[in-house]
Image (cartoon, rainbow, N blue to C red; front, top):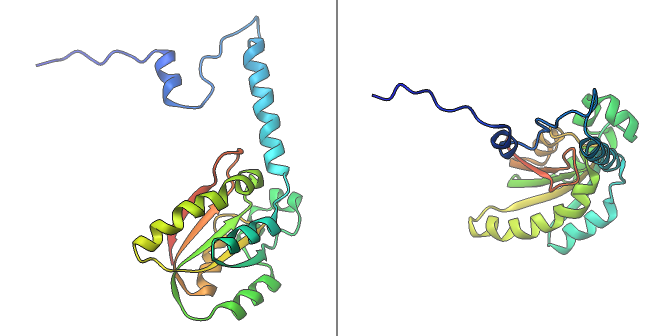
Length: 191
């Protein structure tokens, strides 16, 4: 019977398990210069990603080129500063967008796709169409039909719930920009 406890992880081991900044060291009472400069650069990149412009016309064109019926909607967060201060408004469609979706609804279908700007329009601008280009054939192979594709400005993930309910989708895939300029997160939710 082995009663030895496992050996503790080293800082190097912990760093390999997470992108978090662990064990950066000290230079006097401060961080080492390299760690401080890396953090400052990452922070600037994150701020740029959050405040980037969501290229709705290019996104609509990209989705149309993939053969999807694409619509553009907006949340109740009409401007970026309001979106950042009031997350609740990013979870609800503005009245005009709601009306537009009700008019476009038609027959129920299995899947609708929502592409939202989220916290990183940069990530969505760069990666969403390519991700869908790869995903669509896989969905088709599994006989999953796509109804509408919706490009949502000022979007939080929960905006997909309202969009899916209005369009009569059994599932909704929300591609939304995360906090950094990396590929968008995909959230699947059943309605």
